[in-house]
Image (cartoon, rainbow, N blue to C red; front, side, top):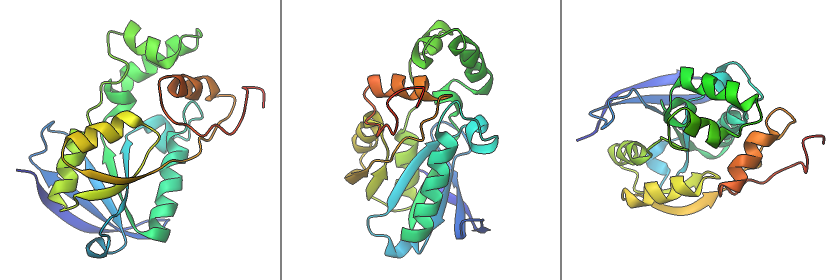
Length: 200
């Protein structure tokens, strides 16, 4: 059974938050939840399930829009109350070094999904059932999910969490990440693209 291990105050540049860690997660990884606002008053909280992206989240890489998505949600969560689930699933689950290897292939005009396959992985190796485990440990059974990924919605609902609403977000598109985002859109992500071409 997944339980909350520790809960500590987390002052951030966005505002006050709580950081939660967990026991007995099925994949054995150190995922965390960051809660903005009074969790007990968040009957149907705004939730973002964010997969770790060191290059985007910490280094400000423009090869993806992960860092921009994280920043936007943190600001939104402070304003409205919400929960960030930060999952340690770097590179859509293939790990940091393999993600960098995929970057090298992408520099040869191979799209992000084909690059994964050339390295011996599926298009997406992540599982979001662990996010459902965390939500259940937090006694959150119904959420509004911030995502552009339809597979994330399906996996969360299949694991027993009710998604009462989906909040889409605009993609932060630039010439450096245009092809990456276009590939995701072609795979079924409902991205709100803000530019029409890589030259915009």
